[in-house]
Amino acid sequence: MKKTSILSFLLLIAFIVKSQNYLYVGTKSYVSTDVWNFRLVDTSLGTSTIGVSVAKGSHGTGYILLSFKAPAGVVLSGNMYVYLPFNNIIKLSNLIANDRVNSHTKRLYSIDSVNYELMKYVRIETVRFSVLIRNNKEETFTAKNNINTFEHDSKTNMDWMNFGVPTERDIKRLDD
Image 1: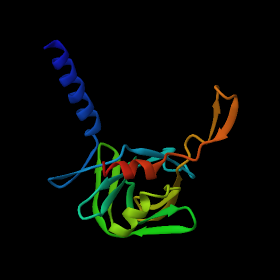
Image 2 (image 1 turned 120 degrees about the vertical axis):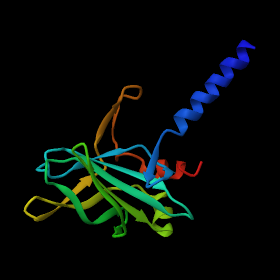
Image 3 (image 1 turned 180 degrees about the horizontal axis):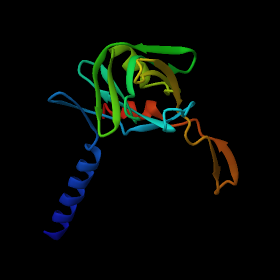
Image 4 (image 1 turned 180 degrees about the vertical axis):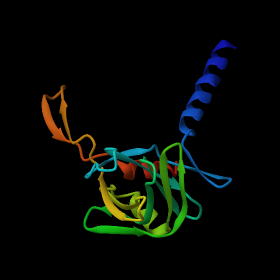
């Protein structure tokens, strides 16, 4: 009895841990990746990172969410561009939602099935986005997927480059 209870508890914990990332669009929820912190090239927004996450939509489509803590009067605007290896660029112009909550500005775009499928196999290298400042001036920024760029492996005593968060792996896992 005790072994069964412990096993049930462990299975429940594994289920809770696996299912805790969701993106809510209106009253619907979609399983999503963790929020990846991409490094802003220009930090004049008052922050050094922007949060990026991807959710699995229906019929092979997806969503991508940008969010960051922004000064008053600053909101995300315009199209978003996702840069992938081999000069692949995804232009996202289908805006689903734009919001500002607790000093965080957020913008949600839909991803068509072709580009969502592509993102399962290649890493997101950079995102490009615009912000609208109080005086209606639009500025464009880029954020790179390379927060941890250099690591040392103590087991092999070798240094190696880390090419950022494996976004393709995380997006592919949404299908599991």
